[in-house]
Length: 230
Image (tube, rainbow, N blue to C red):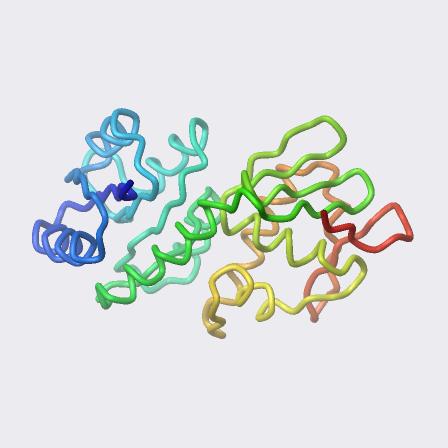
């Protein structure tokens, strides 16, 4: 069954080009031209991934993302014409999985979507990683602390899985970025800080992820044992 992409952008030319590229790649595509319509479409169509413009009438991409994240962990790629890094980081902090700056290559957008969808789909035979009372289930992209389930976005999950794979080891931002997206660009490295903040908020207690100032992050386990992979 084809994956469904929701494109939300008020520029018809961008919607048309992206729709054609996604359809050529074998995806079903639904569209919306503003944030309000996009939110209604997302609730009705239940897409597998959303491509979301930052600047839109009625409801902008940030408000859309804030609202939807209270209801769903569907992967979101944010499109932004803004060059300020702060705007991009805000998008990541409120739940976007990735961002692409305009102007962009439609082929690159489709490639990024494929990576996120492939990871979000999971694998029925995938492993479960356990460290202490924390476990990650790759089949459902879900974290659990004791009996408490922690839903994660695909990007958050990959960062967590990398940190938990070697408890106590410090991973650089570049290494975590590569684990999350399959590529690491220096200009994107600060985005990892936003994802770490999101993870800490969800995990609570946040001391599970420790900052190594000037270097990166590590997973702090209450046990001396390494990661257990099932």
